[in-house]
Structures are given as structure tokens and as C-alpha cells.
Image 1 (cartoon, rainbow, N blue to C red):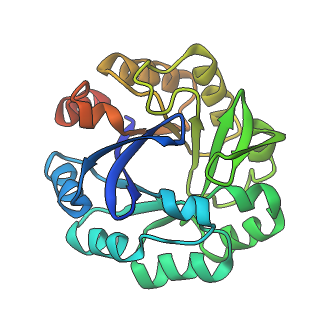
Image 2 (image 1 turned 180 degrees about the vertical axis):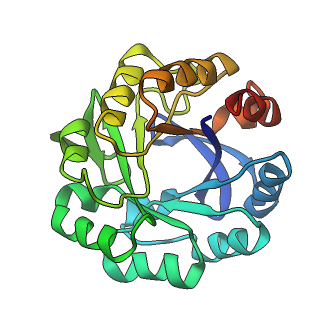
Length: 247
């Protein structure tokens, strides 16, 4: 089984999608993200993935009111990434806003000791956001690319109670072109570290879901997939995909 997690990307309080993380290639799908969250819950989602795009760019949460409203409106847990770069912000989203999992990307690379501290303070509630371009970690809302590989960064946190490693190949994100072989290889290698891995970016059709299920046969720690644009454009039907993912 793979948990399929619908994504809601927030910008200026609206539900949008970007292509390859490019803020200039934005599509607005809905002006009411709260209603969208309810819709995914009604269709069987067991978790919702939220991204504060403004927060990722600014380095602090920018869509707090909308995020709080979504958490209150649904009964399923929500996870949040984008701009979570200090202890106060992580504490705020987990303890005050009610987010189930805080996803940290940039600061895990820049301050690995701090990330370890957060994981140990909030066991199984802090996830590692691994956003990669050509397998190298990208940071600051994907505006910068480091010289550290995704696998190398993840390896630093093995054995810790990390909630999940969420791996996104930026080249695939929002492009509706499917999950490529290189990404599948990266996912299998990450799962081999015995960290819970969630695929993100490029899941476009039911066939992509099936390919992830095949990878899971050899890499059982691959246990989730985030789906974004494909749900909004109708190339994946969520209830159908969930039924297949649970077989």
C-alpha cells in the first residue's frame, strides 16, 4: 500500500500550481483552498500536503490564516512545508496551528544539527523535504541549488525518528510528464536507507501510481506519493487511485 496525498500549494491565499517550481509559471486552480481540502477529504484522502509558496520564498510562514482554516475544516492530518526555518516557526505550526507534520528543507541542509534537534524534540512529526535538481538539493523555494546530493543529505539523518523523507525531482514537478527512471532509482536508494520515503512531483497517471507500487515491492519504505496538478487537471481520479494503491 502507498498513501496517496493530495497537494494544495498556497500563494496569496489561493490554491495554485507552479511548473518546475517557477513562480512565473503559475496556474490558479481555486480561490478557496479550504473548500479544496474538504473536497480531497471527501474523495478519500487520509492526509493533505500543504505548501506555503510565499513562505518558501520569504523564509517564514505567509499563509498562516488559510493554513489554520484548512486544518480546522478537515478531520485528516495535514503536513506543511515552505518557510519552516527556525524553532519558533516549527513549534508554532505544530503546537498552535495544528499541523501534523512540519516539512523542513532549506535548514536541514544549512543547519543539520538544528534539524536533528527538531526531529528529536518532535519525534515522527518533522519531515525532511528533499527537493532536487539533477539529484542535487535545491533550497530557498528552489531558487538555489547546492553541491550536496539528496542521498548524501538524507544519509545524515538515518536512525532518527524522521516523520518522512519527501523527495521531489523539480524537473518533473507540475510538468505532467510522469515519473522518470532516474527519479524511481533515487526513490529506491532513499528507501534503502530505512527512512520512510514519499514521492513527490511527476505523478501524472494511474500508471505512475502502479510504477511506484512496483518499486515498493523491492523498497518497502517507499510508503507515500504526493499528487498535485494531475488531480486538478483530471488525469488522475483520486478515489480510483486510492483503490489501486491499497491493493
